[in-house]
Amino acid sequence: MTATIERIAGEDAIVWLDNLERYDYVRESLNHWVPRRGGRIRWPHGRLVGYAELRRDAAPWMAADSLGPAAFARRVFWVKEYDRSEQPNDIYAVGCPIEAVDPRTVAPGVLGDKTTRAWGCTCFDASHPFPGRCHDCHTRRVTTLRTGIAVKGHHPTRKA
Image (cartoon, rainbow, N blue to C red; front, side, top):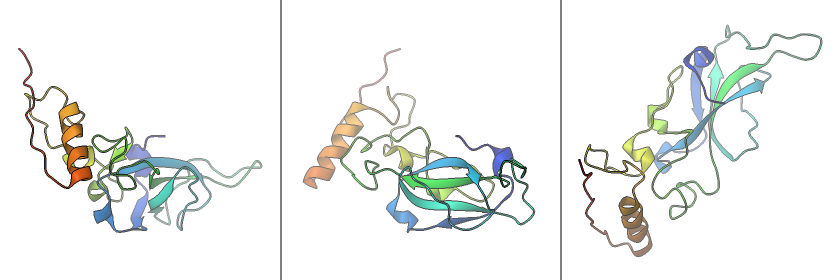
């Protein structure tokens, strides 16, 4: 589920489990079923890279009742085995998943942003036909990664 400003307002800190320089993007998700405000979160959907810790006074999104304990909503940051940090030449050599954010833009209570670094493409001008997801950028990046030789190319301009 996508994080919202209201749901992350009680955050106190973001704990990173790895060096952020390794990641152009991480996946940002909101885990609603965490039974405590702090500590490491279990995350079965990929490799956990970071998580949010909540303030002591942060309210649970679901109060405790006879069916179970209170549940807190906490952000998790993670990657899948085919993300760019794990497989640079795979499907996300250029582009990124919808839930991806640049980890350098994440802070407690602040949603992460997609940046040109997260997209893996620096062509975000008005003349570019497919900003961030173009075939030319993908081909140049993959060729450069595979051969070690920078490939320069030309973007077709958008016809008016």
